[in-house]
Image 1 (tube, rainbow, N blue to C red):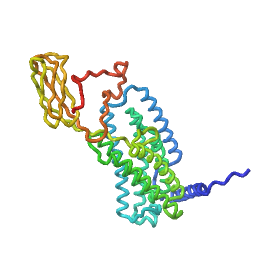
Image 2 (image 1 turned 135 degrees about the vertical axis):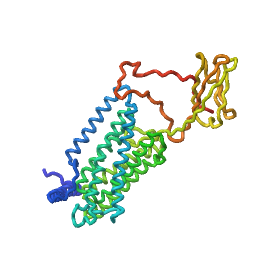
Image 3 (image 1 turned 60 degrees about the vertical axis):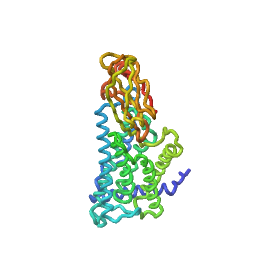
Image 4 (image 1 turned 90 degrees about the vertical axis):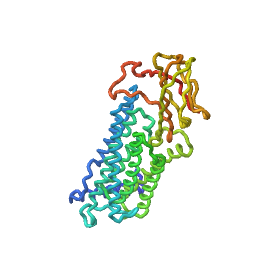
Length: 409
């Protein structure tokens, strides 16, 4: 029985890939093929298999570990990692923008130019191929995204979309790059690198405690880049094989961008339109952390004969969440507490339960949240390598605050 014929697009896909390999061999023999190491299919399969296995193994390890990695050296490593990501993506953006500013390029139908050929009039073909390769190499560096999330026990960040994106983007770029190293690929690489500059800048700046006004637009920008890339590839497909890169590369890009639009679109609709909790299969961009401003005011007060006292605060302390610390001076006062908080008409708080005529030191800290969600309670900072030896060490008990903490009216 005869085998069914392949669909026409699949036959063209295979023929296109075979034809591009023939051209690659000719360039390699002539010494004009740019050096683009580690783009072979075997390498891509091995690296993605390693990524998935290591991710699973690290997850199982951290699932058993009682504490997340939360020490200062680890936080410094995260800062350095995000800074390197910004620098690498920024270099790619700069390189492509430089070429766009010095050469005449269009949105679509830019042919791949062999370095040193008659078409390489500006001599930039090899430079742009090297810029493209830096972008490709960064996709493996970004495997650390997943592993850092797991090491911090931020398992909710490691969604299906996150893992799918990290172990597929390198495959897509690696399959196309040896054959399309300075043509229409400039647009997908430029857009993705620009988004990554903004995304990793957000991570870096947020970790330093500063606001990132561009954070709310990241998901929209990601969707926009997918639509532009898919549009470019679809236009190139419709104009025939003489337009842009190889046929098989266009098919890969259209299919991949379609999957990204579907997954990111699902995340966008749930998070921003329907306001539903996100879960498995949703976005990879971290949610904005709260940006908070704190102000403190401190002093001493002498209690009256009944062990009570009143403290006046500046009027601005009416507008935030107040945290109190009261310290008895001279002798313990187990019953000392904040008996009344500031009100709209009276910006003062009262103490009670102290000793007659005793002195008390106090500090009031006002926390105002300007953006994002309220900060989650932080786990105790442990040594990166220290592992608790018993349940009591694993969950250290913190002393209760010296006074009740309530939201200011």
